[in-house]
Picture 1 (spheres, helix red, strand yellow):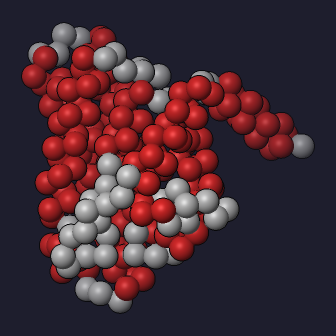
Picture 2 (cartoon, one colour):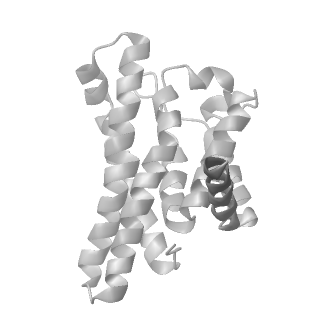
Length: 198
């Protein structure tokens, strides 16, 4: 009974910090980024999309509760058969070559969000040079939305396709370069349009 009461209190507190409009807006952005299509890359069955850019923006502008809810809702819609994933794919994407990247969105968001909030709180307590703070925000995205996401995604892809991990990761370097550019733009946007610090 005590455990159930604590769980209910946790859920109540979790959902109390959700802005429904922002959450729904980002679900729509993830869907739009997926339906926009992808650019194929030789050597890997996964293409370049704008979904990681939306993921990076979510790490800045959504609370942890909002981000988890938005990404969970997005994945759930695809699991229910709606063509919300890259190229208009639905359920099959969750067990296909890009499955690791899709399932990795949530932990990647949480990691980037935690780093961003940590640096933001530190910046409020001490005067951090603008360049250093900007670099810290970029690192936040690089650690969660790039490094973790690719290691996790490529590992799952290697397992599902029975392809060696190293060749897949080598083929993914062009994605990493593209996502670094996306991260730079995401940081510029966040620095000019005040982002969430909760």
